[in-house]
Image 1 (tube, rainbow, N blue to C red):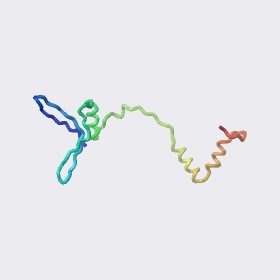
Image 2 (image 1 turned 180 degrees about the horizontal axis):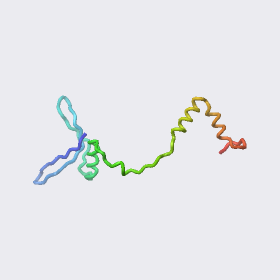
Image 3 (image 1 turned 135 degrees about the horizontal axis):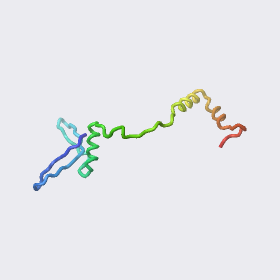
Image 4 (image 1 turned 45 degrees about the vertical axis):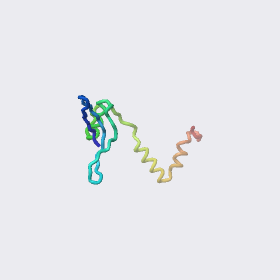
Length: 105
């Protein structure tokens, strides 16, 4: 896929069409299929799509802010271990009872 700019002259004016196209071969002949017309798109969106198609970096990763999420791996390992050992029902009943032998709600 690529973005193509097509210039046409009509009555002394130059008109530019911007299309998203796919090139392919059929029976040894090269053909082009128009996927979308991008002429009315804002220029910054066309530039971003073009950069994405060329595998260029669209933004700097330094612009992103991130934090460490909660760890899930240890809980998953313990859960799988309990399932394989058949200990899940016993642990579940132990965890659901409070110190007076009553089930928590």
